[in-house]
Length: 115
Image (cartoon, rainbow, N blue to C red; front, side, top):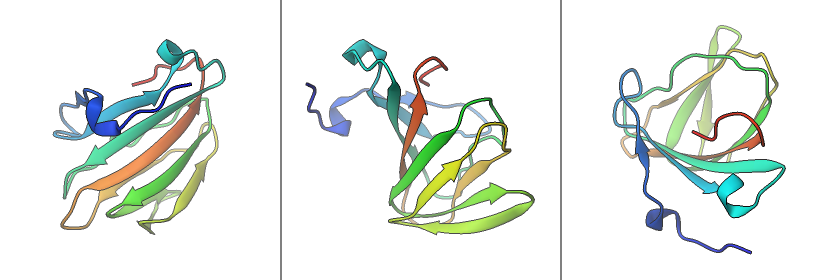
């Protein structure tokens, strides 16, 4: 079993186009997780993730802040408390639209790069 506080995990800080965004692996292969990886992302105000696709699905929970997710040519609001399912091969992107950072938990299957 692992119990941790996210602030005790050293973040990876991303370059452009997500400059200043932070990602942390909360639970992953180094912890013995064989099926899933749980990550936490922090987007500063005005920051976006790159628009991208990949083969695996993932599940997102918006923990804090205000943001939007890009899907099929449209931006949709995802306030704190929102859950988002993104199927494999679906183009997507997140952006922070509030004055505070956007924090979201992202679950992916084991196998793809954890960050």
